[in-house]
Length: 368
Ligand code: NAI
Image 1 (cartoon, rainbow, N blue to C red):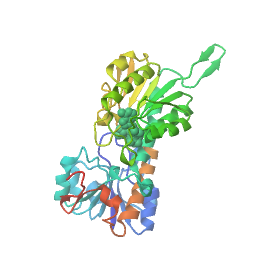
Image 2 (spheres, rainbow, N blue to C red):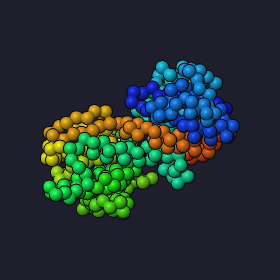
Image 3 (tube, rainbow, N blue to C red):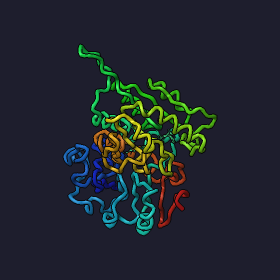
Image 4 (cartoon, protein in one colour):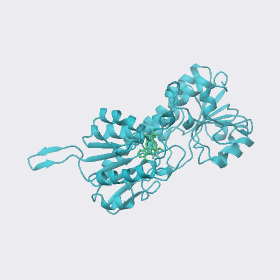
């Protein structure tokens, strides 16, 4: 078996799907790894480091992928890369299937077994493979760093001879993986943090990080199966809008991460709220790629509207690429070594849950 690690082509994507550490581990289990030259540069990994770990370095994608049984990726391959990928190979990465439905037929023509790791069921056995958690955690961290960099204000309270600097106030909307790390990071920097989520179950986690949990006075819970959120009633949404409005006007920075999987992101920050915010405050809309929690944020842009800076980067993990690649590569190694080698356990729920296409047909029941 040969594994190929190709350089990511998408603009701004700095991560890579294997590191020297995981190359060594694959080699120890008898699997040869070929890395396309330059694949690690965005994550500060030179070809020499891969070679020292036992990888072959190929000058071009076509040489790298030749005869490979497994292609490791961060993102789905672009159309012009498909000719390199051997027919019948396993393609593994964050394939973003909701936006790549059109690509399924091309993958099927090549009889690829395409695995999309964002679809891994969030059960304890899958934790070491959970790419969403490893990447969202870093995204939540980086969101706060970017917010602070755009804020013309100090974060911690400072008592000086010239007077006291008040601590910055931060609001986190959606206390999932990204949100909880955003809370922790903002707290570490000295901000006064509050957070909001539709799932009452996260109240304890928010409070254990030292933030205030803002609750909508309603009997309705937003908890759906698998720890994800569900869509809320109109009555709840109205109460929520008022509460967010009253809180947001006092904030210096807002990190919004609210998401319902497979649906457009809920609008939580309206234009009127942005108008009412303090001039100079900052919103980081992490949900921007799913439509955004704020309609004024723009994909991959930083814009200033009504005196508020809106940051809409969709590639936050790439902005911490060194660590994002280390964690992602380990997630992939755990998936590949546990479930695909030496032979694929097709009936395992983690395999069935991530497999999009197989033998020329769409295999995932969510996409048939
Ligand atoms: P998650 O599923 O762990 O957390 C989402 C949270 O939002 C959940 O706690 C959920 O209960 C909450 N939520 C849902 N609807 C809500 C509502 N109406 N009001 C308040 N809270 C609500 O997801 P995770 O992994 O933390 O990711 C969060 C978001 O960040 C997602 O949209 C994800 O796509 C995005 N993301 C963006 C990145 C970027 O580079 N911009 C990188 C990583 C993640």
